[in-house]
Image 1 (cartoon, rainbow, N blue to C red):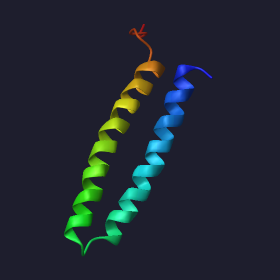
Image 2 (cartoon, rainbow, N blue to C red):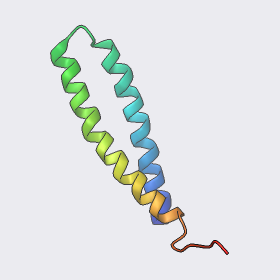
Image 3 (cartoon, one colour):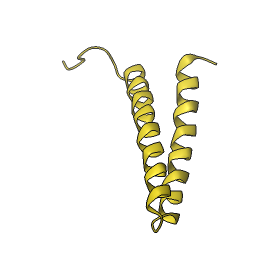
Length: 68
């Protein structure tokens, strides 16, 4: 498996986790402490997800300008 495929797998796993955490956050709307903890985890993993997305975009976009 090449590096791009590994990054894609990690990115998709992270997206699934973030989606489940967002559902979990709504379960704790009444509990401020637990909701804050879930939001903190979401923000941390969201930053990781953004980094992986940037890496994937850099691997798929062409390097030059091909307009003629």
